[in-house]
Image 1: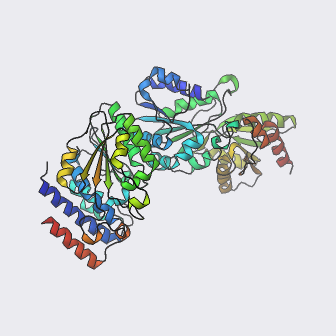
Image 2: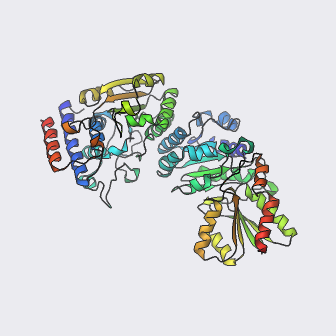
Image 3: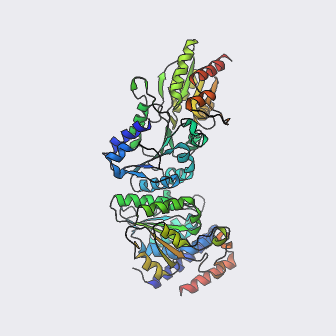
Length: 274
Length: 306
């Protein structure tokens, strides 16, 4: 199990990688990337039972990155975990390259499910969890969604299903940054009280600081939270976390840093790293 | 038709523990055999079509072969984007079994009509589309579908229709079945309209017209070899489908004919783009929109005499 210091250092490194990827491709979504970096690092370094040398192992844990628009964060973590090479990473969002803006199963390399359309991840994850349990396979299925995906009816269909069928091998992680694509979640569609909603659907709930490597690690080590119950982690996060001028700013859902902003972001991420 | 289809699958499921049968809370009694023989392989997900398709994709990614059942519009359009993304983009062996081709649900009304589904499903990459016309052919499709390697949409229609001699005429997915030969024109039909085409051919023969009848059960991949061969004969070609004339069999055949340089007479017989609000059972609606054997024969005759 990596130390907390190492995980934090890893998160800073990933934030730097994401900055490089987004600046190089002049792409969007740096804010949504930064809100889930610490969760991804926690999952891929200690949280999930996975092995890049055996990516098709039948009893590997499955991961679905349902908020596919934040793919640079996923690719950077997969790279550091050994699923994809530096060369692969260099092919992100370039014509004829390796990875597009949304994760694609066709490229394999640790990507289990193609995503990009919101609200698809949990139903697919519930299907995996159902099938794995039928096979008495010990693997867990982890699904990471944005809070905006909780607007989708399909997500709640699967929430209802998983609670009813007691899928305790299913783990939903909500990147709860409280910022939709057009404004604060509170103003767009208020999701609170969110924990109560999940409890009412027969899930066990933990609310954690989604940027605390310690909290993330201890939470992922205590799965399932309750036997015969699916687990949901409501991870309190900040869109744009780690760069002061990006934090909680809708602008950084879309914008790409200019050279000056990039330098400042780089410096702030570096300082956190120390 | 669907009872026979699922009873056949029940027999196959008993020896294949990886076969699963999902329904979105529809098909009362049709799954009785499966539930009795292999209850662990049946799953009613509730009235939640989008979730059903997502679940099927997830199960399939873990090695299961999954059949999903619902009424056509709910299956193919309510959950269309899940079909496109979760099933077809991943090219998974998930079978969509849609009930109620065309006006099959008659008095249930527009919400239950399956009249745009073939156009929608045909357009999705990796999806194959097949529509059996009779009980025997539905059973045959059940057998052919079990080991089909990719996404397959199975469009079921009218109940209680048997093949002549009660023998299946479908041999393979993607291979048209010639039901009768005719030197004056060719009727290419799918699903519910196959028996209508045969009946129309009988009526036409009384007027001295020898019409060939082909069961083009597989809309995709379309048997273009057959269509090109028909085109070369130069004989008039009619397509018959209980589906909108937009995007279904007629469109698919027209695409191939246009690219093969066919210069002969061609006509799509199907449901008009716009319905007029008439209510009735399936036969009544088919007759109203010109799809009964009589009216079909009359339309063909009129076209041939032009």
